[in-house]
Amino acid sequence: MAESSFPSTNPHLKVGTRDDKSSAFQKISEDEEWEVTSPTDSTFRTANSATASSSAGNDIFGGSAFNENGGIRFRRSPFGDTSGDGDEDHDDFNEHPEGARPVGALNEGFPNNYALGRRTSVSAESLNPTSAGSDSWVPPHHPKTEEQVSRLKTAVSGNFLFSHLDDDQFKTVVDALVEKPIPAKDIKVISQGDAGDYFYIVEDGHFDVYIHPSGSVQSGPDGMGTKAGTIGPGGSFGELALMYNAPRAATIVSTDPKSTLWALDRITFRRILMDSAFQRRRMYEAFLEEVPLLSSLKPYERSKIADALDAIKYSAGSSIIKEGDPGDAFYLLESGEAEALIDGVDRPVKSYKRGDYFGELALLDDQPRAASVVATTDVKVAKLGRDGFKRLLGPVEDIMRRTEYEPKPAAS
Ligand SMILES: Nc1ncnc2c1ncn2[C@@H]1O[C@@H]2COP(=O)(O)O[C@H]2[C@H]1O
Image 1 (cartoon, rainbow, N blue to C red):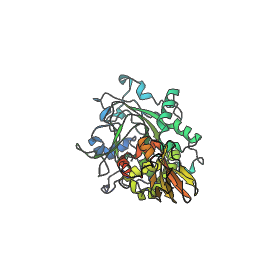
Image 2: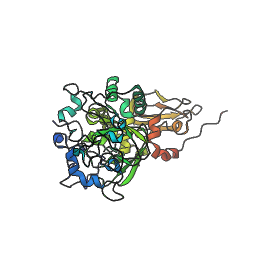
Image 3: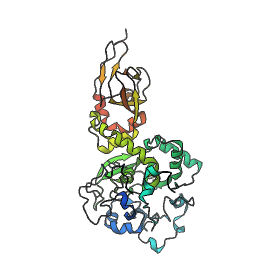
Image 4: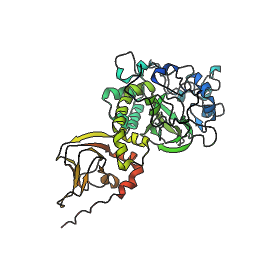
């Protein structure tokens, strides 16, 4: 059964050169779920061994960090038993000293954190987020200590994909997440071109994002392509391949000596988080493209902004911002008109139409609101909270600072 409500192409994926008929990822659609092998499947490596072995850096799934010489070996999946039967030991690969881990012949050449022979592919039916509750899917439950739960809650508190979940959904996701310590710098957590199996949230540490124009990691020193960004605590990555059933769009590499990730399996991601992320991204995609302030951003950067926006309506005459208040949010005007007013000035000092923004000054300079903003017609705004503003609008800070404002009248 195909998911008709979701786009099947990943707008962030460079597919221009991906016409290699032997590629395991040439076309991955929901109907082909049974045919798609996962990076955790033993058949996967055969199809992709050239890429896997030529990958630069240490690949947490590719083996270089975890081979005989690397000294780090895991007995089983860092995600524990993802079958959801409650029999998992998610901390397993931290608990067993190197020598205590059996290394079977089957695992020859593979990092021990591979769950060899296990397919993560699932039927299209069980991936359909709209069918939640109508089938036998049981969300995975990975027991956690109180300390882990508290760290996890802090880690996801700033993540916008979590901010729209209800209590039950939030609990399901927290239960399903698995802690994944990254023990070194230069560990490749995701390789561009691979199939997607997990979505990751960063608790601590930083991860660089590399994109190769060919669509997958190549051999040689520049095989990962160019750096496209860095993701830090509270950020997340790995959603695109799961949302679009597409190959990984980028390579993600650890940059700190120690970091901590939380991993969410593909099905729980699709069942619980994806619906709202998709709707938000689709809802704002066209609008954000039209916003002049954001025109220099890459589509992926606009998608991340879309995740963080909240739609709010104001009726004509109501105030959106009050002069002198502390600033907690930034606004994009999606429809209608508004104007800025300053105490002591008898005319509007600025007027706003669709695509304009306001509310940035108080956040940029940690100052009280410099003016009031009042809706002159019924309006709809897209609101971005302070954290999102700081995290996502850094690249356009200079543009915002260039806006000229009328000075406040001198106090009489
Ligand atoms: N500029 C970017 N383009 C594409 N993906 C990016 C970019 N920056 C960060 N990413 C993340 O890198 C991840 C690689 O795996 P996915 O394609 O599943 O999801 C991707 C995004 O979460």
